[in-house]
Image 1: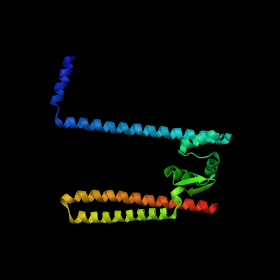
Image 2: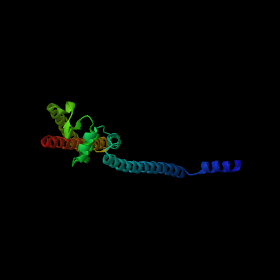
Image 3: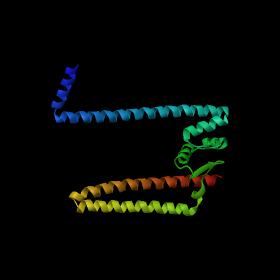
Image 4: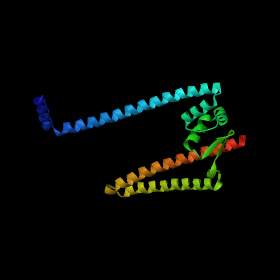
Length: 199
């Protein structure tokens, strides 16, 4: 046995540097693939659990079991609501969009007595004006910085190219996020307006 250990050590010392680097690369690759596989497994498991919970919610609704309906609804959507509000929400044609908005922005909007509306500070008109101003300013500032970065890449090649390039990528992402947030806010505004017109 000691002879085998000595032989392995001897071989390790005489391995070329490229082979050692290849072994490290393979180990890293295997770790990444393993992590990705485990993540996919957990995602699939969570989907299966969600499907089971949806079946249980249907059963609880059919049995009119108030406590079970409220608890299962909370487990699925992460929302605490009264039984009557849950029934009205599930009966709404836009149930998927409404539950998504309620889950994504808790405290900003509420669904009560069949009405989808802003809550607290978000009811104020001045708040929406400030929010719109900040989003538009952020978006326009991002565009300006992206343009300046592109000009910098053209007129200052070499060492300065990389910082300008990274800045342009970063602010492109920020602009995309700002645009997405603006669209989301408009969607919520439309939902609240539609709900108020239906009341």
